[in-house]
Length: 266
Image (cartoon, rainbow, N blue to C red; front, side):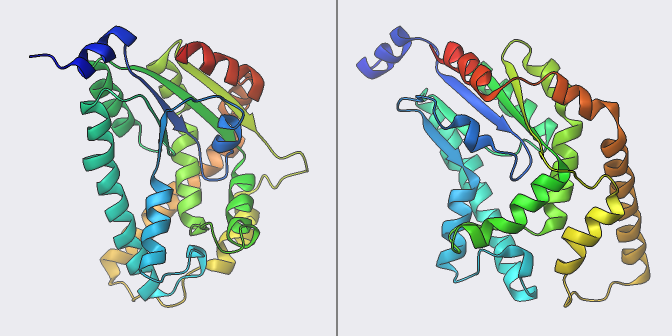
């Protein structure tokens, strides 16, 4: 038997979901601000993660963590991720609740799976993709903790680097995946930026390299070195690749993106 609430939801139309994609510090929240999202729920993994870090009495300055704090932070992230994937989003889908997922969308595979699940449940799904320079992402992350007075988190720079690479290489994938329900905005540095990966690493990563990691055996060290080299090659290619310029050229202003989102929600 169909309940009155279910019937009203069906009459009101299909539920809608907006998935945000972008590296840390890209400015996704900046684009959303100024939009009348009505009563749309905003799911943000960071909010739960930060709450759990505070409960565990762990500093939100993750880039300066020691081994014990890194372990606690990893546990908090696992808990926050489980809550989002196993509780919050499933509950929203079950109740046909429209929502915004404020994340990075670093994994194209997981994003596609979520999109398919939502569409099978009757949702219309939209993606807002926000691009930023690697250096701006690292710079915003480095300053985030201090500028917030210790109320917002700064990630380990190596995590930011990896996430930036994953999100940037996913641009064409997402553009094709979402079609008309896709818009991108570019928030880039106005000042001259470093284009050389080695210079970027020296400035933003090296000062925060963990000093208390456990020594790896030869095989583990070899795997680690190989993964690091592959990532460096990928990032170097992206920094030089014309595809990054294509992202910027195909992006629109914040106001144009907001207008398209309003049309989607109306």
